[in-house]
Length: 582
Ligand code: SAT
Ligand code: MN
Image 1 (spheres, protein in one colour):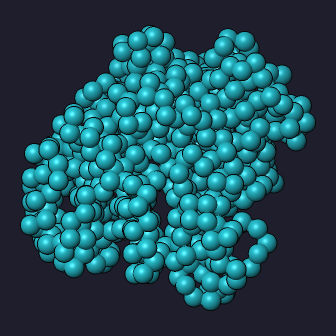
Image 2: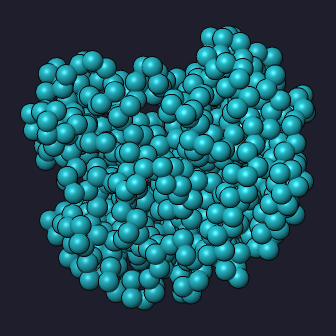
Image 3: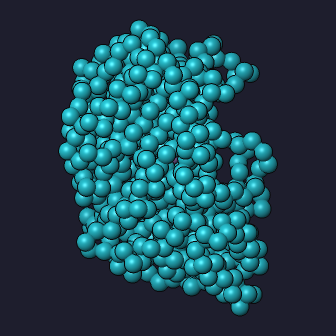
């Protein structure tokens, strides 16, 4: 029950449509969570893990057909098709609503319908936004409780403010043919059916905090981005905050929890967020950012003491593991974790390496952010943190230098729009093909990319102390196919250079594509990369870059008339500078 009439009426409508057996308004309390856990243990939704080594940890095995986001059935339903843009699947809103209505009819018979009020961001932050997810999945409720500020405090804020995003979710019958993730940004509404998986079902995450929020941010003058946020504290006690966007498989979670190499004594990386960043100009002309989430929903495979000790350390208690393997003593296990041999695979069958990996490659952990050893209390600051630098990145074996600085905000927007990664062997299809993923928002921008870049470009009028924009590439390879840069903790050396640039403490090598470091300005004490290789990582091949510029032009031109002229002007400047230097 609620005093908000719109919410009360919507709950009644949904209940009449879906026919749940019970309705439960979530308070977010510990007792409520315990009851939920107990009922999931009884139903088999949760399997208890070793409570001595992993207190409060549970395993969830999903339907084997329901293990990832489903972009092909994810739609943006704006009244005008062009408002969704070539970057989205579009469906006409009335048709989409009718389709979903038919699927929802009676879908919650025999189930409990949970009303989940949540707040994206600190509960008392003006940058935060609220939503309500109605779901018939207790697994979703347990996850939302970690990933968002869920329960009574969020409902109180909704009753105070009167606005919220409406998200309706049912797992339905998990039939992939009857699975749709619909977004109605003009109505601040999400409708999801047929999947219980993370990004399809935890509606606060990609559906609200990126697709709906990006649309909302455009009308309200802020940015909703697919970025991690880290604080870099120097031995002098100064902390600079960096927001960074990468396509998948570029080590975003690792960067968010980086541990600096040994000689960075007194330096510390603070984690504010690993996935989503909402930014808004402050009175001082800087951009101030919050992480709208309060938990991590991370990929388990590859998480290890060597690659990300902070992540491993936070997974010993109060975590939900989805689709991982299990050891003989009932501990969670995934490929890359350690030398143990699991006994059970993610489907619950005896583990047989001939059949496949123990953990599903997209298996996940859900864990409260506060359990991360590098978690910063600033994540709770209602005012957010001031951003000194925005970093874009991609996985490029050739061409793209280790790091470069944009010549201006506008050029930085072009760098973001040109972001790309080469496909890895992990994805199906050809290896090494360059895929554009502007601002790492390709699957998450809730409107036409051309309008999104125009919105980014307006920030020069909105704030006069904008962060510098950089582009990084940790993934260059030499002729023999070896990585030229060690990555992981050593990326700290690049972060240090970025901060030195923000403070104006080091110079720059001006090139046609942007400002590159002078090799001597990258801290190379105890670095495994020799100086010749470092120089190669900081070179510009003008002929190859001219070809790249034409590929970027071809990509951008598909956005037609709506593409801001400024973007092509920036690209032309780069092209002209490259020809002049050739
Ligand atoms: O499924 S999620 O979108 O939540 C995770 C991811 O794909 O990044
Ligand atoms: Mn993500």
